Image (cartoon, one colour):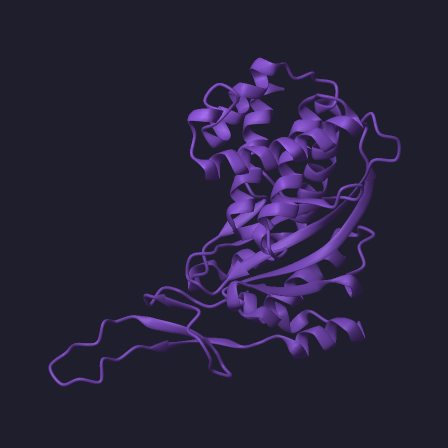
Length: 294
């Protein structure tokens, strides 16, 4: 059975889900033409919202823009199939980068991190990502928000629970979300435990210098020889780490949260930067290095 046929059997009684579906944009690809005699057409397509506006991406023929209404239906149906206590009425849709990248998010649980801070709470949510820039894959991962400092981060692993290109042959992969939602929930629980373990790992000045040099190409040794811009970034990161250290001690947990504090409050201008921008890249690099140190 084709994915489009399966969707005929999906029913949602939620008024909020229906309202969200009605608000979703339709996106189409339109053949690009030179309009000039003797100049052959490039065989490319522009991706646009059906209402017009800016081009979201340029693609070849194999690219198929994700049907957001179908995406929503599959998410809701997959969540219902898991039998988990997830409220589909709280699903949210957001656009970033002028509509080139999009997410659906669903709240998961609130966790308490086993850190030196009492009541160190972490909110989590499932993050279904796609895009129309012809570069962004459809994927399922998770994001977290530490409530004390409002530090946010997307799943730092490259091995997303599910990730695939938006092509005609991959439409049926949207049917795989049910099992992957349960796996992603387990990943979140593992991540919370990972954070608690980091708080037990002390950080020496040598570790700190190595970390800063690997991440940013600057540390105490070469600070005065570095460009003023690099010094300013280094100072802001040190300030962020110092705030975390004062609260939870000098350990890998504080170091990681110092970085996510910097990216969340200094670097990210909008939430989407924590998912797609330079802030997301720095967060992922920091997680990878700190994981290697743990």
